[in-house]
Amino acid sequence: MNFANIKFLYSLFIFLPLIIVAFVLLYKRYRKVLLNLFNYNMLPVVINNGVFKIQKVQLFIYTLIIILFFIALSGPQWGIKPQEIKTYGLDLVLCIDVSKSMLTEDVTPNRLEFVKRVSQMLLEKISTNRVGIITFAGIAFYHCPLTNDLQSVKDFLSIIDTDIVPYPGTKIGLALQEAIKVLQQTGKTTKVVVLFTDGEDHNSEPLSFAEEAKKEGIIIYTVGVGTIEGKPIPIRDNSGMIIDYKKDKQGNIVTSKLNEKLLYQIAEKTSGRYFSPSYSEFGIVDGIVTELSNLKKSEIKSKYYHLYINRYHYFVYIIILLILIEIFVPKNFWIKI
Image (cartoon, rainbow, N blue to C red):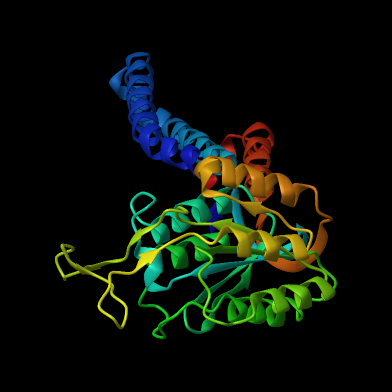
């Protein structure tokens, strides 16, 4: 059983003992007053006539009515019924770069944490859409399937790190290829990809896949993460202390820089938009939300929720019955029982 307004049930637990005490005191006072009206010799006659028994029955009925009244107010529910809920929105895939270059600290605290914060903020504002997540480095994985349960998406976002894809490198093209494959299976819905990356790519032909996305009607928004000047990629020990920086084969420290040109070209090919990190977290989120709000929404899912059925009226019927019994049943009926 479920209760729609359980606070009234809690109130019953608080007030019922007080009501019972009040009725007990009332009964004792009634008994005392009644006994004072008769002398000792007449007392057995009064008792045999069941005056006290009638009073007890009445107080019991009143107590039962009060209990049932509070239960009815609490909105008792049981049983389930199916109800179709139609959801309108779009299908959105977040492609998140988790390569080691995303540990660069040219944004606070680093590029990957910046992306996770922006993504969490974005999810707060797109509640009617279906969202999935692809993470990528040297290969792309469809880690979080498209779902309306955005809390599950948030939970997944919280555990993303650079070890979730155990293949080094950055292949943006593979991420776009995987996103296209996922969105091809969603039917006739508005399809969107939001790509979070620093734009470094290792010969994965992202522009070719952007062209393929355009043919499929997929819009790609790109979010640049990092700075044009860039910074070295830190290597930390288990305690979080920086012990070195990533180096190339010649032993030179690698400086990871934002490649805005590529990200702009990817977005432009699909009539999307490029968002620079200079927009700030709030600016990026508001910009993406504005873009999404201008897109056509489709019915992306119809699912059945099993809802509890309100049953308070049964208790109301019993209350009415008890009131009718109190009014119309002769008092001497209780004496005979």
